[in-house]
Length: 302
Image (cartoon, rainbow, N blue to C red; front, side):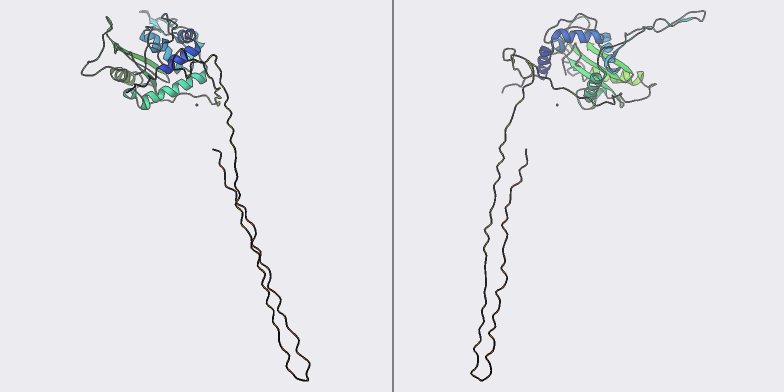
C-alpha cells in the first residue's frame, strides 16, 4: 500500500514559491537571531534556534505583529534605596501586518482546542504549536496568551538522542512539552486577567495567489510560471416543453313537435339552443433548472 505524502510537503512547496530567503528574512525580523540557511526545508527543523529566540518570535505574533526586544533585567535596586530602571529596552518595530498575525493566532488557537496540543489547554484563550523532529531527538511546544509567551524544548543538551522510550512513551511535542508548558503558564498567568485575543474590526479581503509549486508533486513538474489561471465552463440549458392537446366538443340538441290536425293554428316549433362550448386551455410546463479558501522555524509538525 502506497503511503500518502506528509502534510509538511505543503510547506516545502510554499517555501519554494515564496523564496527561502524571504522566509529567513521574516524569521529574523520576528526575533530569530541564529543564522538560517535559506533552503526549501527551512520550516522543517534544519536550522537550530534557541528557546529564547522562538519565544521572542511567538511573542511578536501575540503582539499582533510588533517585535519587542527580549530582556532579563528590568531594574536594579541599590542599598541606599535608589532604583535604576533604565535596563528595559526601548522601542518596538512592526514587522508583520496585524491582520496576518491575527490570522496566525486564529489557526494556532485550534492546535490547543482540538489539535496536537490539547495537553496545553489552560482553560483560557491561548495559541500554540507542537513540534517534533523526525528522529524524535527534539520536541517543542511554543505558545502564548494575549499577554505572555513561553517555549518549552525537551531533549538531551549533550547529543541528539532519540526519545523513543522516556517514562514509557515516545516524546512528541504534544506530550511532555505541552504538559510542561501548561503547568508553567498556569502559574505565570494566575495574576493576569483572562482576556481574548484582539481582532481587527475591518473585514479582511484575501487575494487569491497561485505559485509554480502549489500543486507540483516534484520539482521537475512545476508550472513554468506563477499566477492563477481562469477556467471557463460553458453549460447548455435545455428546456423541454410538454404540450397538452385540447379537444373541442360541440353538443346540439334539436327538438321538434308535430302539430295536431285541428282547425286551431299549429303550435310553434321549439328549438333548444346548443349548450356552450367548453375549451380546455393548452398548458406548457417547463422544468426548473438549478445551476449547480507559523510553523516554528526549528521544528516539524507533530
